Image (tube, rainbow, N blue to C red; front, top):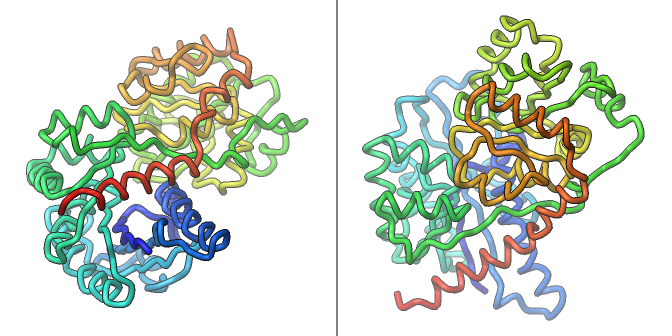
Length: 407
């Protein structure tokens, strides 16, 4: 039996059920391969057993959301995986330099304990910072092979911070293999100085049973009732699924609304930029046309995406956003910034529009779609190759290649 311990600060929990949900779906799909092999043949020796360590940072004074996080159980079974949540002291906004060391300090004894009970074959980090440097230090101390995945925001943000970039490059040198969420992200990593030969592209997955075109009668009226938001059948409906932050560009999407006649915008997500965005919508006289939906339940999100005319994400940087794939799978075209990662999925007008990062350009892209809407089945076809099963198969193959190399 092969055993991977995956270190991930980005992972859902009962207090934040949508945080890093795509990380959980990927590792759960990998674990299902192991359970399926046991049920079919009685042996899962050729598959991967998965253990997750999801460190929880708690400030010295735990208020608000941190109070809920502090009360989480330290070990639980979730999605067929054992998840450990050790605590470390978090200094919000200013403590990033010490976070990798803090993570390593609290997780190494736990991994050693796990290793003594069920031998570990591979250490994995699901984010390049702060997870990558912490996992690299632990793997070196325990003489275990190491894999690190980059997801986009980690590279885009932390590569511009000197101490983080140095730590990521050192972790990359120690890694036996690395993953990038898109071809564009792989090129960015190589441009930073990471060994391109040890980087494989690993695209996201998709829950195909949930995310598909839905044509329920009076879907918008039902959603309006659920969301408590007026969504006229004749009004263009836009949705933005992302953490509310300056990088994701919800302020640009709101400003674009003034140029899209009668449109409604649903912002699905939470984040530090929410108050600013609410004030912006009010200042522009758009408060009644912009709805802050918070983090939507996974059963509601496909309904919202299917009801929308377009998914809008004026992001400053992205690897390959799960929200793009989920929208497209629902038959909803995407209007997003013309970034390298977006060009890998928005390959033509039947899928969406690539625009400049400005309200004028976003509005023009949306209006172009509204004037010439693609067939939903044609949009959905662009997501045909994405599934969590395929994602897990590629992840298992990546891990297997690492073990096959001379250590």
